[in-house]
Image (cartoon, rainbow, N blue to C red; front, side, top):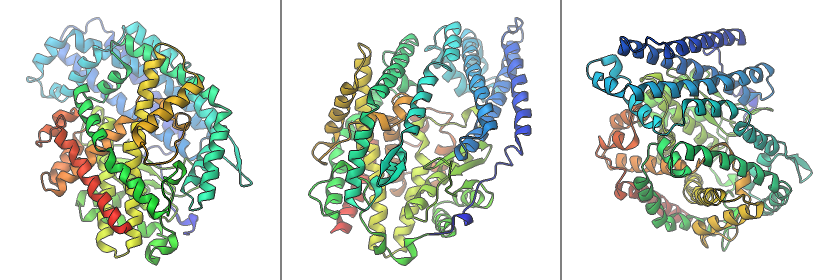
Length: 589
């Protein structure tokens, strides 16, 4: 394995040179917040309204961008050193500022609502105001689902020490569980990483140990989950939503009719994904997979060609840049910029977060965290995160308030990047072992995002319905989880995991933070299939990615004759998946 000392650590100096510089910008932000408060509360706002309103919008946009930059800087520092005293000191302050900005956003939405006729009639007469058209329309929709200003302000304040504290308590407990396994003391995440071990006995013991250990805490986690969901149910009802699910669909800019089309199409195609489990069982010389076999490697690394057994970081860099070059100069150039300008933190070390992420920091620049280990999986993680960086780069062409995407569109570029790399390696390599290893990695992701995430969605849907009427016990939650897994896996595997509701933090940190991943995967694969069929081109792809933050998904894609309300679009994703599973089966035979 490559010497970890040779792996890069990112530089944050182009964001802030020091905490002194950070603190100066923080103070500037606080002054701007006071200024916008005064502008909003100005009794003379009605006179020369459009000019004053534009001034407020411009100031809000500036505040939005500065706050995002400050938060990104702290996030990057804490992801590599969670005990950093200065970063932790400032984090509390930023939480309070974030709460204040939510209140300001509600006040701004109120102003837009109260003056909507004048504002809408002025859109075509004022090009500066026209830039904010989507924000204005979104604000009008949002305001229909807001409590009173006083109620929103109170909720934003108390959530710092109520709802947020429940989430923090979950994080504190789950991260401090220590398990003795094979004479080592491991965290839950370290133990779960062993599901990837090639030794089946180890995987089976991991499964049994994890379930036994989590049983000790399940009553505590049940209490936390009940409290968080009750809070969310109450607030969604106060905000005039018929259900918590409807609230999340609203903020993802997706209507219930389209959602049901996606859900029904997915259920109709689950047998395609279940087939993957049967093929994998055959490759592992098993009659059927157990839960702990799903993540098992299908090939010993010894079977891979020497050139792919261990890929140094520089080899990964060359592979990714060359693959991206085959698709788009813009994508390839962005990757070169990330590699050459210390955007990437690849070195594993104590105190650093697991996994990987990409975060927008300032216009046209991102930061990427990975824990590079010379495996082909690490190369794909790197490509995935560079896809996100490319998306952030394209979004930077917009106003700061349009530099975010709804979650259902946020994975479009990252999964595109993975597919580009996978196709490139398939074209340049003759190694059957490598191709089947890469394809297994892709189909494993698909199986998790389609089948397992669907089970998690069904679990949460049932949980929320029952929680409206009563508290659920730990055993209630176990039964809901097992029923939901049975509903989607059917007999494709032999056993299930009754504590997925504990080990998945999404249940505690958000609501229905599951189906957007499913929809995001399907959108990405459907678009890629349309690209392969030459129904969209690279220019279309880049335009779509540039505009994901300033149009709702339907309006964005219909311009390219892509109708997400139609079943045919979603079937494209399953066509692509089925083609890959048939190739997997062919290689397996």
